[in-house]
Image (cartoon, rainbow over all chains, first blue to last red; front, side, top):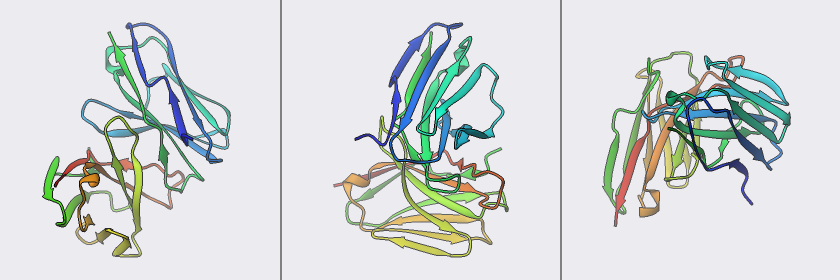
Length: 112
Length: 114
């Protein structure tokens, strides 16, 4: 029973394509997050939703659009992929915005 | 601008000995700190946290120490076990802020040798 699951685990695609990464949590948490871990290994917050409402929106290109159809899901859609988008993207969830975060296993995105 | 720094990229210790992982921060608004552990091809797992009203928090083999004046925290693992081999991330936040944004360090790879 995976608590936070992301699909796909690996994504290899061409520059300019549009792709989506899905995230689901079965922990009953109210808050969900997307992080990017770049080649320098820093984990940086991109977005956070609490009860389907956007509460954190870092300086991220507007090619990245999160969508939360319900509290258990937070998907990430990326338009016009660029080489610099290559990274590992982690989804996470927490009971509330102040609770410890539980992470998925990551999606490794590679842009050719 | 790295607000959370883990200056040791790696650390190697013998099984049974103490592992000490260090973390420094620059933002004086940070008042809540967390440690996460990450195995390869998995997501980070929450380990232990500490609020700035405390200077120590203990959970089994794991103890976190906070020195607010030095803006420094450390994670002690004793005794260290081979299964503790992983990347350890330090994270910090301002719990009174309008959101709960975690700022992570770059991680320290701990290797515990049998």
